Length: 456
Image (cartoon, rainbow, N blue to C red; front, side, top):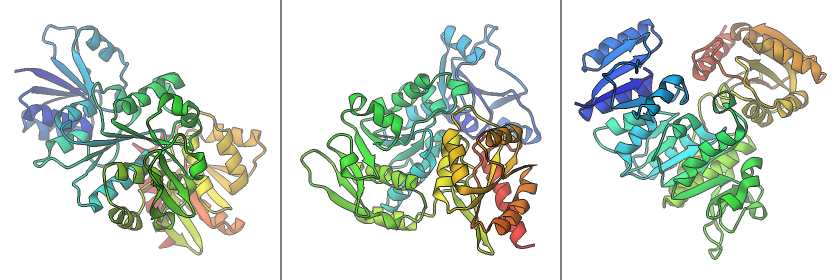
């Protein structure tokens, strides 16, 4: 019986282990951490004859080596263990690649990009589902990809939000439609250079049959048509801003498609159908409509889906209104670019809650947006002192270090009254790992504290 080792006991790792077990592999799951919840999962999987080793890293020095190693998305691709595995000739793949090998008979939409992935993926899945298709969202959103492969009945389409980590550990993943939302510096601690990061993302699009690009993204526009001559480009600025002869654009309040140099432009849906705020969401709308039309979905289904789409949790999510002040959860803004978009999308003046575990990146545009739109900034987490210093350096004095979300929410409400601000915005510009397991838990904490404040 062939042997497989799965590294990482998250949702993806567990699904990969179950899929391999079903296919007749002898499976061992390893995780270097241990906790009460992991011990519980260990027992559950033992009942399925899947060995789980906690507080353990795979040892490749012995003779009894696995035939296959499957890596969860959070595990860096270049750790010494995986480098050694590849040197030893052990096939090493990511969980997404394993899922693809079981689902490659189906058409996929693969969505990647620095920001905008989640909203675009959720909107594409909503459109496909409204059209009567079984089209689950998976990957970085919804199900783990291997959970889709485990389903009793396979879907019609797979809608995958695919991060650079997942592309990096995939060999043959080739969606029918590839969508690239944005490209700005992020994850450089892992990918080292911007070129590496770009090349990883580009791999997914090169392997896609049809490509959709955000033509308003400065970096993607720069590489433009020379790299991607057959792609469908999008622009919220109108037909004159399209790259090439085909694409999707906004004109007179409508999403318009032009499928080739010879086809006539066709109006698909009014932009006012979308409830979400911000120009970036019009771009997400364009890319979603492009994917749907390239998949052959009719205008009625697109219209209905967009009118009914509620938005995405933790991305400019309206939590509540208290005495005329909107509390908005943008916890998913984990870098400067996303946080700048968050601020740009709300009314000013706003009270901003920011901070967490800082990431490398250029903060200039974000700081300029704070100066333009924020009446006050409340700083939380380990980045607070450094952010305070940066705000001082650009001459912005209306900030306070409050350290925790618990202190930030009531103080933000007080400051909103004081400054006659209409919005309290959590848009951290940081990862969450200094205080929370992930950005979702951070956003949930903000939601809970806001609702407790207004019902006190």
